[in-house]
Image 1: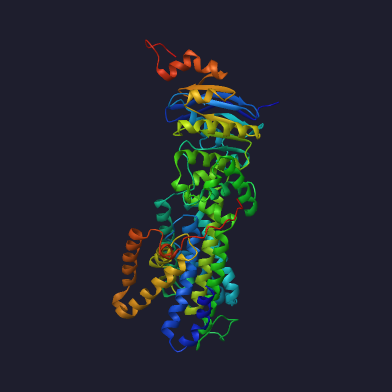
Image 2 (image 1 turned 90 degrees about the vertical axis):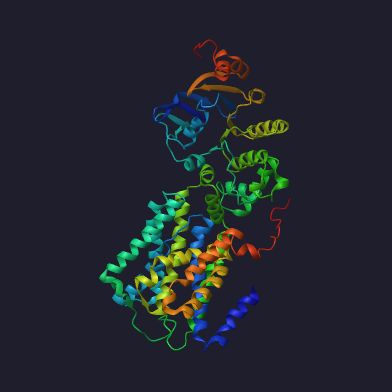
Length: 243
Length: 315
């Protein structure tokens, strides 16, 4: 079977800075792929380049074999690839439920149906009892869940989650992992950026390590996180040795 | 609601020999309708325009020119004026929506002021002298009433009721949800698959169209238009101030705003006559300052009872 998402030699430069340098990888249907790397490795830029927020200078992005390189974010979202933001961005004047209703309206015109679907998505991310809470009063953990619920409500084929554990309580991480696994089991492919290596290793099928805009390594989580190049990228190199 | 509407329906009986108050009511209805129009774009979609006088003027000029040059009926002129304003809204929107925040505001201001200068210098549309509508046989067909102005009252009230119903419906519709999402966070709305450009242009077309229809009504009511009365920048500001004072992004806002602002404007005109030009704007500005300090969500926030928690999803 061909890859659901295929990134081929994508490069992006901002001025003289090469934020991404010929990054390539495939994502299979139903997989959970993690992307790790130190700050400035180009992880978020990679997500932006895939989801249309940044136009790649070269390379191509294929979603289910269709070329989506350089298309508008809204167009790519309608094709079933939805990205969440590193700093969650709720619709602050709306309640939790209405935030998700908006997302449901992306895939259906009927408002009553959209509300039902939105409520189910809120239940799935564990926010149903707070449906009437204004989003501006949400805690960081709730915002992360809300954002995932909103992405789900669009009925995506693949979601790109930018640091879904960022700022989330240590105690809440187990719940979030269980949620991601449920989502995957429901048929949604997941690619996520994460700093929390301990958490990531527990549930991703595969890891990609990035550093300075390049893919350093790709493979099984245990192997990738113990690789010297990856450790060096995170901790810095000894004796000025090149990573 | 019903009681208020009932009072408004019988009010002209008390006002039939009080032209000043009758006129004031007509202006309140008209301005509330303009405020509704502005509110769709400014309140719900969050795109603050201070150039909506352009659409008011375009509506007024379109129907008046169609009547003068082609002898067309004002009701046709109303449809044409609304359509012309909506089309102009889209044309203005395409470049201006590329700008965000304050830059968008300034762009709308510049476009409206350019239109003012253009119409003031354009002889074919009467230039600075303006256009006089020929007096025709009075009646609903010609949308002209000379001796008894009460019909204008009912037409304005009817138009306001229709637009209020439209906005009420819109607020609860798919379109309304998407507009509010765009206002709250455009990038987040894009990430869910909504095109900001498309929905902003739709909001602009509807917003401008409603204001354009208001312009046609105004032209038929006064039977004389010039750039100063329908295209002036201060008028654009008033169209925006009404819903902002009343409560942007609420159904009640434009109506509350008009009820407060129009009497201030009308009475200050009487009190200060010629020397008091724009004294009303001074008072508006003061009110806006008070509101933004004490009630940033507008007057509607004062009246808003704790919303019933409708259990529209059976939990």
